[in-house]
Image 1: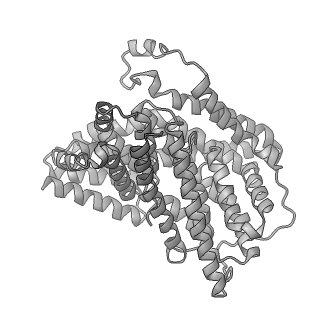
Image 2: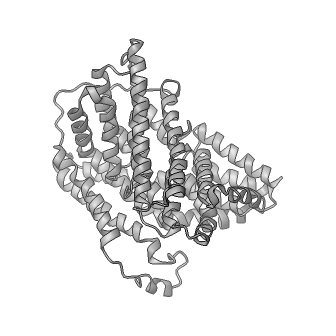
Length: 465
């Protein structure tokens, strides 16, 4: 009965998320449903289980959500993000329109701009480019998704996106973990995804299908757009990447920095400095990126716009962090139920290749798919089972770096199911429906999911990281 309660709770969470209900409200509701079916009293399950882990997650990652959202908003409102996207697409031209859109999205996300901001920044120029090249607009959401929601989100070493940062807190790694495997996975995803979209374009052209007649959210044509030059616009992104690298790989952090705070017996102090170096480094890099973006784009901000941009970014970060924290709190309740031991044992019993990698990939993928969130699903999975996977890896001499990369890439596998918030936003911005465009997005989802197991196979047979 307890296992049935957990499965019922997961199904209801997925169904309500798909129907557009906030997980901030319904994650605790369904967590408490599972707890009640297991005989736990409701109020302690809420305040001591659900809220305790949600608060811990906020403590660890809120600065990154906050600064990332502010950085993205400043890049958007100063026109810097649009300047980068416009230059890339104009340079490659309509003959390589799909590749241009993919590269524009990839450049922005790898530089630290949030996925949602990338959608808004790329769409106007991508739509115009697709229209000029007479490529069906229904392929546009998948092209943007390939650039922004795949390799630069969780594969490529050093990407400052949250999906690449979360594992550092559990495995003591940094965001450059398993760089060769990450590069291989990212290149394969980009290559296969582009081949698929080009094939779809050619099929449409053979049928005589063009851009189509669209009225919903079509950008207005403008020949008087004045955007920052590419050389100027790209500087904040480069600053984030370079400063993050220096603070992570070059700068030597004092290993005793945490000792005075441990002496205070603070309840949420990190166990070791290696668990927070990546977070601290990204905080410093994003602050520098924000300041540089403001300085370079200040003339493009109208009176009072800076305050509005900073406020909008800060407020926007609250929804993102609370969504994910609620999902983490939900996972903490589920993991505390006696029925979860049967599920956990089943997942840990997946011993393909004699390592925890397949077990980790399957678990993270399933939970990312259920929650419709890469960061949320991965956070739940790692919070539940990271210690077991790490102990298993240590027992066979496996580097935690591969655990990091598999978790990160798996989170970006089945997360983009129809109820995913980024997918819903992307389709709305592009003025398309699930019926129009989701099929091609799902193919990318399948490619991403498959690629996790490809890098596991490569690591198992070669040992490379």
